[in-house]
Length: 241
Image (cartoon, rainbow, N blue to C red):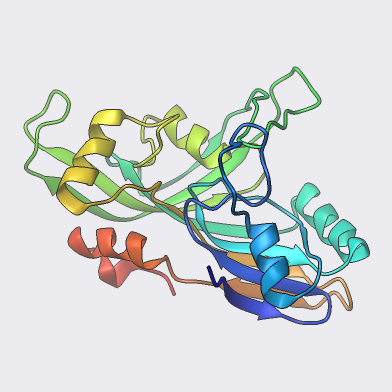
């Protein structure tokens, strides 16, 4: 595997993580043998520190530091909510044109086995915007057709599985989500479009450079497997580069 490098300087490197690749080794996914940390380290020939995580099924921008000090500085920006994050997702149903989901999330183990330090639900806020819709002539639930939407998601906090859990909370789960989604809709996308992935992609990331505080904005279009599904739904003009 050769990872696509989106940005690199003396302190940072960002890649376009493919779906299905864990960021690092997981006790809950012991059979996996390939990880972004290991692959990138071998590819560039030096140690790397991930400063945030993406779920295994999520593709898109993943940022690493090239030394521990930089990792701490960038990690602080993520913890304080100073990093601007933007995602694309395909969801079931037709959400409002735009909205804000302000719904605290309880602790949970993620695929790395990590849990929150608190038993109490933590504040979590996500903004969303509907970009496109489609209605397919296939009965999945109660109705003779099934509706789907392409949405832009901006998490204002960083809780585990926040986007997946928030979209489930408003009854518009992300397609391909085996944990928080709907199996019948996931299977329809597999049958119609050959789509066997979580349709969630990190497409934009904005932060302050740890050297001088200058704004850095990274962007990446959705990966080809995501784009192919969007094209079949007639949404290719809505993809943000």
